Image (cartoon, rainbow, N blue to C red; front, side, top):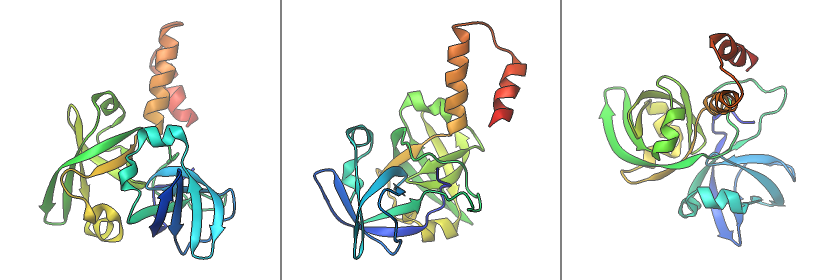
Length: 205
């Protein structure tokens, strides 16, 4: 599990045969989980200047491998004694989004990101979303896109400041929205469900 708070911006040394080699200050252990641009990956080799992770077929079928170059966000998995901030992030990418608009504001920057229509139902106004591993709050939602307002600190300290119109980004939608939809769909095949059951599900998380 992750929080969506970036630990470090690492550098891609190479990406060959599904193995991604990163140069980083963070020193993981063999087998550790590391989120790279929001993707949960396993450390398979420790190098003097960083570490290697491996991308499975399923992962490669969802993400845009062209982004595995230059700099990337990394976040190690939470430890049991870590302070919880951000929001609950699994490192399971749902889809690729595309930046369609960037507008500078007085105290931030608005980004409009388009996503495949089938994923928009999991994107909730004022809810949480993960973009390339960064935990962010959704301002508004349209039929196939959503708007984020990013404060100057986040723009400066992450790779978001490098985004341009057309940039492809990894998106992980809200876990609870996906879980609740799955439960509701399953329940609908069995029997009716009311607000009591929905409240119970919400409280269980």
